[in-house]
Length: 253
Image (cartoon, rainbow, N blue to C red):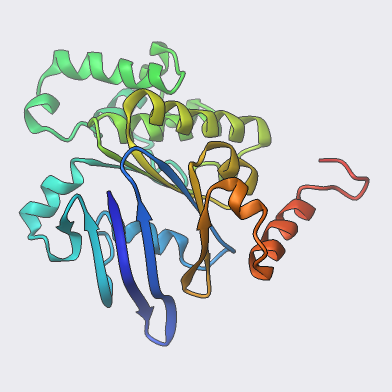
């Protein structure tokens, strides 16, 4: 379980989070929506301790993340897979080497046999064939790079998966593939997931609950149906703006 309580974060005079309360139950996927620049990624990075709050607390499985020692934080992060917005693959390393970096247990990472099997398992879980392991990032498509990034995030068999804009920059077909993978991994691996996204349609497809971050706080949180039927004018305006953005000048989607 993930719980953020009264979390504040500011950079000089810029207030990003102004008292965020946010909870993710074990085994569910929560999508975090909000306008660009509102602080969604900042909130996500609080969960695995990449950013510490100025005020408030972040508790995961009963542990206060901001108060963990360096050694405790290292152990904690072994249970958290992080999918970066642009994949963050190392161009000079093969797909195999990139995915292997996600194996967080030192003894497993040094076992050549284990690594070979685990990398292929992870590639297959994200619907990539074993031959992709020998390619370099420059030799694969943008959608495949995103999937390799997810494969790396699950290589260490995490309890939690944090996705930072996993469909950003992708065409609708590849975005749908990534959304389907998020749902598949929750079902097959039983992970607890938080997905930061700007894609309302994708969020409503894969998330158990959806939260809207607005003006430094969680403005609304509930099931997709609950948000879709919300009477909150801010929520309705955000969803309507997204819907209009999906419709072209001739009414095409």
